[in-house]
Every structure is written in C-alpha cells, then in structure tokens.
Image (cartoon, rainbow, N blue to C red; front, side, top):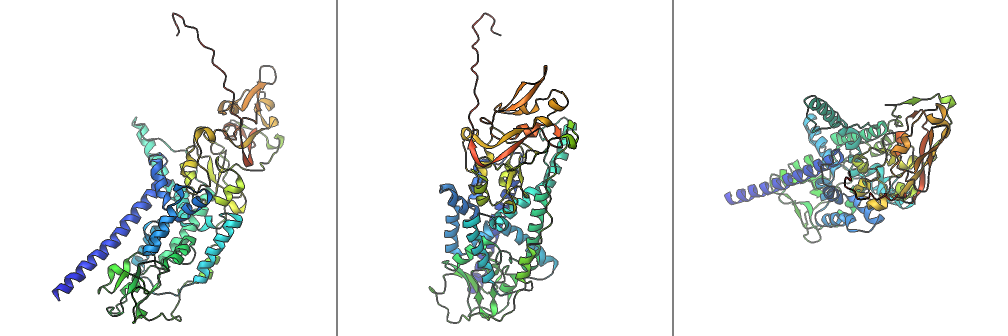
Length: 538
C-alpha cells in the first residue's frame, strides 16, 4: 500500500510538472511575441523575431507556399509534433491560445465553477470553415484567413490596442526625464489607428468573452489552424486516454477540460478537440488518465463509445458565427493637420482622387500582396517611420487591415528593409538594401495649381528637400522663384514629398500607387571635383 501511494505521488508530481512546463513555455513565448509587436525601440534582435514567428503555423505554411525556403519550414515541425502528441501547438505555442487560457481561468474564478463538461462536437461547421479558408486562399488569397488566423488576431490586438497605453507611459516618462536633463528615453509620436483599434479590439474581445464562458470553443469551432491540427491529431501516436478499470468516476477531468472533449461516464476523450493542456492528467486523483499509445496499439475492451444524444454547448455555434459579422463601424483614419503651414480655400484648389494606394516595397503587386498577407500587423509595428497603416477600404473589402502606405502619417525610409525582413508569410519578400532602393511602389504626381509657390508666390521646396533620389527637383518658375518638377523615372514612390508638403486640405503633390511594382532608375551621382593639394587644404 505504501509502495502504491509512493508511485501515485510520484506520478502526480510528474504530471503537475508537465502542466507547469506547458504554462511556463506558453507564457514565455506569448510575452516575447508581445514585446516583438510593441518593440518601438527595436531592442529585440531581428534573428530572434524570425525564430519566434518560425513556429507559428499559418504564417509559416503561407511563407512556404509563397516561397520555398528553410525559413518557412516551421509548420513541418508543428505537424510532426502533432503526429507525435496531438495539438501541442494550441497550448504551448499559440499566443491566442494562452490569452484564452487566461480568460478561462478568470471565468472559473468569478463564476465559481469549472468548465461545463462534455459538449457535442460540431465538426461539420469546424471543417467547413477550414475548407472554405483553403478554397478561398487558392481563388482569392487570404481574404478569410486574415480574419481567423490566431497569430494575426493576437498581433493586431497588441499593435493597435494593448501597446498604446505603453506608449503613453513611455511618453510621460520621457517628458519627466527631460525635465531632469535625462535623455535616455525619447517620446514616441505614434497616432492610434481608429480603424485598427475598432477592428482588433472587437474581434479579440469577442473571442475572450467566449473563452470566459465556454472555454476553447473558438479553437474547436472557428480556428482554421485548430481544424487542420484537429485532423492531423486523429493520427497522433500518443493520445490522452482514460483507463476504464481504474477510473473512480470523480468527474474532475471533465470539469477542468477547456475543450469540453472528455466524457468520464463513457471513459471517452475526443482527441481531435483536445488541445493538450494536461489539466485532466495533473488533477486525476487515481492515475486513471494518461497519455498513451492509441487504441489500435493498446486495445481497451472496456471502452464505451460516447452517447451521441449527450447535451450540447449552451451557446449556439450558428449564432456565434452570425455574431462575427456584427463588427463595429470601421472609420477611416483622419488626416493629421498638425504643423500645417498653408491652408487653402478648398473651392480654389484643384480636385484630384488617388486611384491606387501603395503596398509595401517587396510585395511585388497589390493583387499578390492581398492574396498572401494575413494582416498580422508585424510590419506595421516594426516600421520606424509609421508609414504602414491598417487599410480600411484602400484595397477594397478583401484587404481590410492589411498594411498600406499612408503618407499622411509617414514616408518609406530609403535605407530601410525592416518590413520585408520581419514578414512571417513572405507576403513582403526579403530584399537587399540595393534592390529595395530600386523598387518603384508608386509615382509622385505634382499638382501645380495647389502649390503655394504658384498660388501665393511663396518659396517652399519642402518636397524636393525631402526627396532621397531628387526625383522631385526644383526648376525656374517666375522671377527668382523655383517650383517642383517630378522625374518619374527615378521616383520610388517613397512618399517623402507628400509627407513633407505643407498644403491642406489637398496637398500639392501625392503618390499614385503602382498596381504592380516597377523598377526605378538609379539617380545620377555627380562626380565630385577633386580638390588640388595645397599647403592649406582646409
């Protein structure tokens, strides 16, 4: 008896250690991903960011499909891990899964009850969403996936919602330290995107509220990554199984199951819905539940199939799917009118309308970018000039939340490749600095009727001063005045001219995006006149 108790205590200790290990790994990865999305000081090395996104299922898979390379093989390791021990990804690696676990724990605390027990599966809905996501990917790109990818949902929430309180704290601290003549912390001039905030907060909150009341229902009803791993986990080598002979019918395993996939009365575990959190194993008082070889390796004659008429979840899945369509009104970001130097009468300005917006350099074309991007917002959080902003209708309905270049908020740095370096799906292809400098994402268009030199007879030239290639250069106009002229052959569409233009409400120069990116000519470099040696060269 003493020996059996000793073995039981040792088993409980090992199982609790396994659960603790899962929590530590999941917490560590989620915190690291949080700081990658909120790393406005660029403190995290680029290679670490790439390694963390390497193990995200959908971004890794899309990266491999778009461009076969070692950087996109992370999904293969996840599949191998799933074949070995089930949906380990959902509890160990997925940041949205950890976020749901946090709210599940809060629900258990505040509602004073455990999860509601075994619930009927809805695989028709679950796998239909996966099928539709795959089908639309090959026909229309990521139009469905960008809404449902767990990594993208988490990334958008951190970028547009959770990081802004940190920015305010940073700016308050910077203001305080400046008064003390300490300049180690600088202020971050970042405007929140109203559209991004509304979209990310509403969708993330909906999933968290659902997890508060119904556990991992999103993971087993909506998530395409979960559906894919659910199918694979049916063939996993090790599965969680209940020993019918040792089970004392206490029901603890069923009450702590996040997925509602355990029916202790029937000694049944629906392993396709199990997210491998190990809560049931760690809390079993009699060593009756464990991760073992599947039934075709170790037969259990006492195993009784579940009752198909067993009660279902309290929340209607169809109502939940319909609720996803009730997103809040998405507002377009307003123009930043700070530091406006010249406000003209709108009735006297020449009206124009941008036909096409610019996609990030390296995305090849807007059509291809819309097909590949999952709108995870990682490039938006990494952009040092904040020119990348979440789209509302700039790309149409199929490109909501995908990044576009908003030249009201910033410009594309001529010497920067961060967005292509950090993109986890290869929607923005990696570029060398030399190659990036020649990508023409759009062309500058000068409207002389709106220029203050033309309307007011005033010197300006802000657009030319900020142009890195001097595609916008000054030419003689009237008397001693000069006015901008655009050389579209060497223009890269970086938007520095549009960002710098002081005229409002309509600027005198703007960038018309290229539907398909072109190659710009390199600007001519004038040879420097050599200085003759002299006794006093300075």
